Image (cartoon, rainbow, N blue to C red; front, side, top):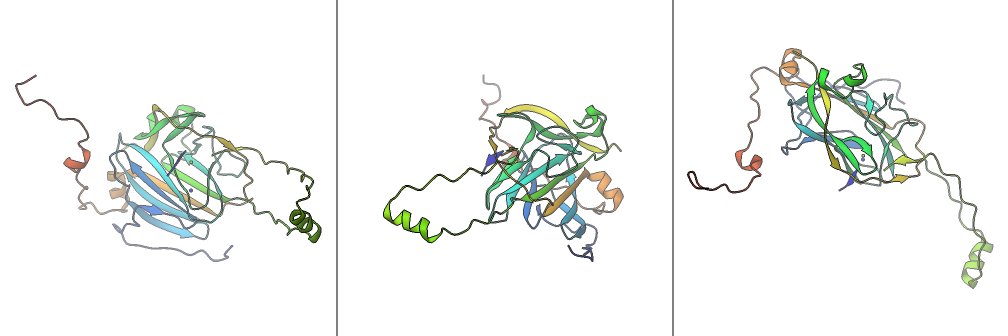
Length: 265
């Protein structure tokens, strides 16, 4: 993960077809899906309730993508991230629980999840593909196909009592104070037509480290992004048929070098 995150009555958000939410979603943490072409996936809202956000996203087959997460809180958060129902660190079926492996973001920090973690310093890239070609389908699991899920768990806050007068007196006099007993660490967590799915793409370098982190018992927020092909979103009425596809930018997408003139080696 690169460093750059009860109400009794549900609140329903209703928007007309074709109205986008923008490029990010989330209140405790913001989630954005960005392809390697530099485009952020347009998001289309469906319903929202306290602690859960659900949106649709338009995917393009073959595009490699990155999940960008920004922690909006002044304390650390643990992020259980699942793609097509599989935890992106362990590869196991995810239920978005706080006992699963998770990425950690510091206060107001931003991280990037670029693929399935296959080791401490490497991942295999995410890319949009048909469900049959997806990583989850390889395990015979299509129970949550086409969903990018992020569960946000703030770190448990511990009360630290103020120093006693005796401790303050020892500090002022320069006397040595006995070492406090180290608290037990929590279980270490990792420091971020056919249906659409996410494939197991090429390997790349992506360093990470193990840290101690104790998440709260319940997720403060769960963000669910259901990605589909454009034709599927049109048939569902999420976007109108006559909305033109945003064209590629010939200057932005051309990242090569200057070729020789025609007819010259």
